[in-house]
Length: 309
Image 1 (tube, one colour):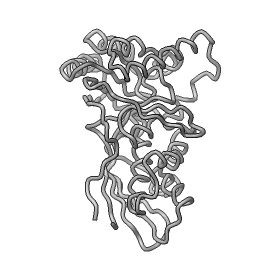
Image 2: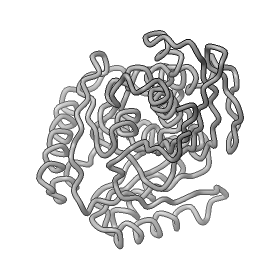
Image 3: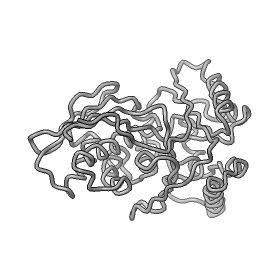
Image 4: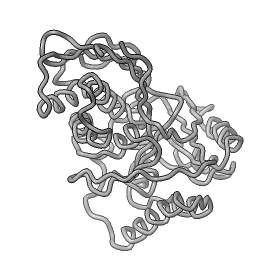
């Protein structure tokens, strides 16, 4: 195999109660990446369409992630990465994670798949550090493993694949403004009141239980964030109104997708999820901000191969 083309999907991280540990994978939106073997060792960035991204291999999250892999697994040949970037950087739906995870996934296959999908997270993490200044795998894990994932530890990369209730559907509204993760992390407080921390632990435990038991009502009750959301909400135009519109239309819950500005909602059933999307849109119609709405089942596969030669 000398060339591989893959689809690297978008994702939602944090999921309200699971800051830096919980995430799930989306279906309809993602990057198309083509990775080709080259005779010269190293990594180069080829064509980039859709967004303006660095072509310097030391400044692009995709190549930085691959370079991390190649430090461990030596190769006599190199790799060229071409990217059709469908996920806007700073959108809050895992743009950097898709690039980093997609690149290491593709190179791993060209090398004969020496690493499992879970093992690839450690290399993709180098790209996330470049993008956000922090080690976190809450987007990377669902992109590589599919479905819902829980990162028990970022240090040891103890990642657990979680089940997805069959009727669960996500709605994402993405206002086309950029909100970099590194900036949205900077406003967070480093200490948390004990009472709020205990409440957050309870919500996260209940959310995970709800996934295993298909308990949609418990899922709804647990989608609360009293620690991170209050600070980041002020960075997103009409966040509270959009969230209220989603819940009033039947969503189980709603919150900030990743670090924003995208807002997500989870619903039981596709019909409700579409109605929720229409309700969310109405809140942006009187603002001079372009937006996109995506309705997605939970993507259980994650990254997938489109073509290989």
